Length: 217
Image (cartoon, rainbow, N blue to C red):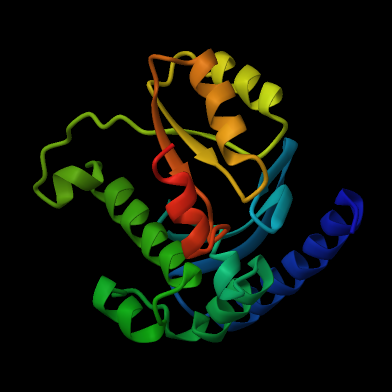
């Protein structure tokens, strides 16, 4: 399916989502919008068994008294979640989203899934904006710096080495691998970034025998 076909499909679902929410929420003081938004990637992102050319998200907006809170989720492809399926789950509980929605309500309304994550994030964003506080202030937490990773998708070894070099500002690199030349790829990346901490993510691409073979490397 091309990007334009994806865009048309998502626009159709988006219109259905707005129509549903408008019909179901017009009598509520909390207004709920459910959108499907597609972000095209600059280059395909390859992992074991999958090639991603877009990131398809569901976005929830809660609005009351001029304050908007937004939450977004991609879902888990290995659990069969799609932007459309998450939008459908959210539409099914839209009537239950009222003025006094709590995190406990969300836990009750939805199982652990991408849809619940989007709604929960929207509620926290709304609370933070309504109170003019950060989420960590609302929770009584102290923020601290964390070092995240820069992820390299699967490509030819030389290409992955180029990407590692371009990501010179990131001390930690997460390397996507499969069973095709994993050691060669790692050697190319290590040669390009001897300073980096490498985190290996195979996405169920090795069996136990392969793990034993590659682990000493």
